[in-house]
Length: 344
Image (cartoon, rainbow, N blue to C red):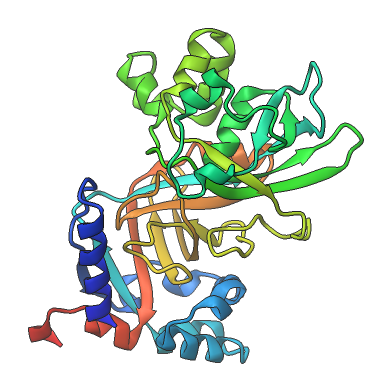
């Protein structure tokens, strides 16, 4: 499978000539190389792994999943069947955080609730559509019955698009859940980095709450700042997910608070366990499961940690921008096949 992964890499690079993607470098490690490995709650990680492992179709992963469903000792399971692999592409590790927002909305437009969440239009299903500016300035989607709900704050709509999923509380107390349905095909641009480029803030000052406050204080420049990001996300209702479960990730399964991460699947297989060593003000050494993706999550050493639902989760997630390291756990045969042939 290692040769297959390398082949997929080169095919993807050939089909995406405008995207700079470094050839990955693989280093096989031992579990003794993972600081605080023995102190983690491996049972919690195994529970999260079981959420998505039935969907792993690769034969090596299927065999491992079969063992996982037999309620093995969790630490033994990971150590006996998987191999820690450090995957690098020359870029420094960056951890960020994401969460499931809770918004206030209505199923019909009112003077208060007038900012729509749109379903994916038919003409955007090929992943190529108008930019955020073009959608908003031409009113291209209005009047077509694509509105799922109307929200009271355009900044909340923008950040919901960044997060990819959320809950909407209706005036009668009812709730609907929305998840990612597709996007317009334009690359994501960070409005936080744009505020830094303009000299408005220093990098360490930027957070989701700071951005939110600045946009609200600037009724003209604020919407223009949001349009700096041409990417636009469309939604679908996902009310089949029980309220006690997390939102659906890229594998169409619920993600788990502080056990699921978003990764770049060009480097890290979706569904794989990933050991993270996050530095910063609140260090974190923990076994996570790669169950989600994100338009801003690009690179071998890049991860977005899911912090849960609601405002407090959002405040914590918004503060995360830390260095460190992540190590992917792969089936042993897969891991050794990634080494250069002379080392196999």
